[in-house]
Length: 571
Image (cartoon, rainbow, N blue to C red):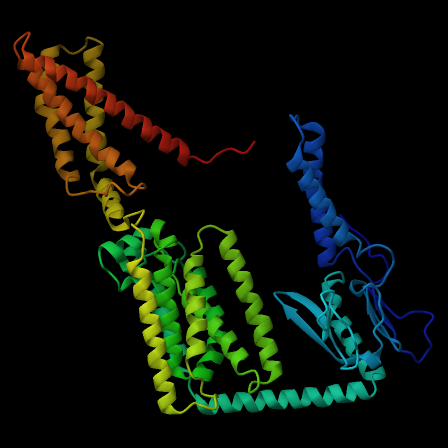
């Protein structure tokens, strides 16, 4: 489906003087805003149709609310595309935009024009002159106005930025000259700052080292036969994944560290290393190699320890994301603490790019399953606290003695936090080692179990249909079926899952059912040999009834679990 532009995306206004530089950029249906408007318009059709055609009893509150919300969002987006107003206009009189309610900002009110792209969203940032009294609705003063370009075609974003910059150059006068001088000074300050950091930390070997270890561990996983993209939880546990039961009950505390160098596939590894690289390089130069390692490892351990209270209770946890979040948090804290020494351009860049990425990643972690956000939060808090405690190389007080002292304090605080989180870990909900051992053992024994069950059921059916005499049936139990079930019982005996492990309930049911079948066969053999009217034989029959009832209950639970595991069809 094609939606023509309201007018060409960018054009010179016809009523402008010949020597005037005037550019208008019109909203387009082929922009990001246009695409979202079309998408949500179609989505609004679903609750509208349900409201009209699907029967309901009472007031359909959720349908009305969802329809109202979608229509409001469509109106909010769509109003930018209709009405013939330009999304952006630049000319001799100033710059105006639809998102600014077409208010014209005169060039005399502008101190600078620059572009900014965050998570793929491009905007023109207008910095206001000191004398401009622009305020937010809550009273604090605005210093910069953002003009998103989302309603303009993506291919025209570069033209819009160039047009705004050229218009500012043509008509900004003294403001433009001052902006260029300030920008030149800022770029020089950034260059000098980067040179100083390189002199303080010439080689960031700590960053190269942790990235190298993460990649090397993944390659070792790959060489040992683990899947490159989706390794099994049991395999990851064998390599050192985090698990509350393994750490707290088996006292395998080393897992808090080894889990931070394991990953659930290539994509998981790549995303973590990409997130670490830029922020890690800057932090490594600010703090030096040894303090960078302290922040990285302290964040990794604290994230893993906090995960013992949440994700690692139910599933095995792996990944360097706790350490990565710690590095991001430490970098933001360092930027804030030394904002007087760090160039403003560097601070804004870091705060914008890394800050937005951090907020996005946290929101995504809380909104999606399968993400260990406890490790993220633990690492973030640990990294931020360590950065606040430690002494950066650029600090005025950065003597070797001072840096050593604060590093010792930071290490002590990290160790105390990790120990406290371990001690206060709740009773684990899932015992992964025992569960995986049971699953592995059961897989090995399963063919023998299935063969024994199939043979016994065949003879039971023949006996009930009168095709097998009772003496032959009893002899078959004694010579074939009971020995077969006893062999399975002996194989299952070493395998166990604690009663507190709810996930292992199915495993315990399998083991219990086999033991009950062994007991049932033994009673049947004893009953066949017993004297008629024997008191023991009568008691045995009562026991048979109890066993049969328990076996039916186990069979019902297994059926319910199988049904729950099947994907549900959507209405």
